[in-house]
Length: 482
Image 1 (cartoon, rainbow, N blue to C red):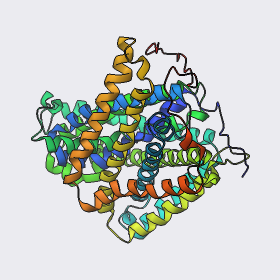
Image 2 (cartoon, rainbow, N blue to C red):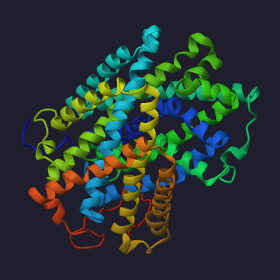
Image 3 (cartoon, one colour):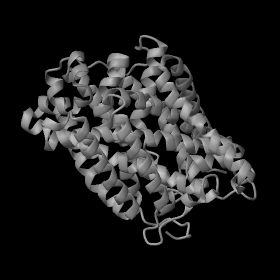
Image 4 (spheres, helix red, strand yellow):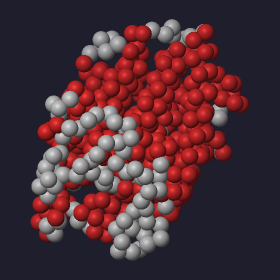
């Protein structure tokens, strides 16, 4: 490794950024792993959960777009929250991402191993030992790819995501045609109505699960220092990504409810895509949907590792954690120390988890816990854009809507969802979700007291101040900032 702190700049384009954003949300994996969970929680109002969570989520995407115009930093929400709101909150926002991503890499390695074995050796797919071995092998391979460089990482994503998207589009369109002709449940527009939920607690529970569906699109922000037109491209890549996955999520949720009975959905569980595929194309061709799930799982493990390593890199560079994390490899221009530490820790946790609890229990607790952590740092980012741009919020209708109203609605929605859902979650989930965020206070205090990093002496930045960066106008001018 070298002391040079720079990542490989001007490497990724808009297409790369969009592909990374889509892969981060993992459409096939999310549909397969979470559809049955969502429908079990809210019934046939699952499309409404995705819609009414998707609208504020788009507000968070827009917040990221404008925060990135202000400050290109691989730490993304960590840096933005820290420099606009409070340095301590910025640290915890970064910590929340690190914790949630690490948990996901552990829980996501389960299906990576299982689905791979389902394709190559079906008799072994329920073997705890073989699932552990294959899942670990995939993770090690991903860590190597991410370490070698961002260009090869993007190329691997192109291949995996292109195949995944093609399979999803073919299956989704076929499902709407076939299931529409002979539905198990007739389509109803009430599936999208916010008034159809049985109670507010059901709505909130569905919203938290839906948050997990969308999470991951923000990887494009963590790659901003490595992207061409760094102030604009990552934000528009995320915008393209979130719109695409929203359409995919709605398409398959509606299709599942039309083509499968609630009993079939419950029985299918995390294999719902394969069940739909078999019902649409027969056992031979239908099982190919397992390939889409496998590719999606592997792709999102890769983007998740990127998010962790880039966040650690930014925090190490600022000195709020060990500075070794802020150094890059002389040749690869990637944060190798972060990749090695996170990879080893995640693998140890993955192996231990296999022998401490069942796959389904770990996965369910992880999904709920991740939802709470994501709500935390997404809400802080949405508040940050309002605070940073507060001097120009009322200079135009576009500013008011895009820089204030939509981010404010997003932040309030996320905070309310998190607060209302905590009492209904079990002690294990709350311990994982909230407890691990609070654990971040320990390294935060240690670094502040012992090392006094300059990051904590930054004055809060406001758009329009002399020291604030003039973000200029992006290629697609969504709003005149004044």
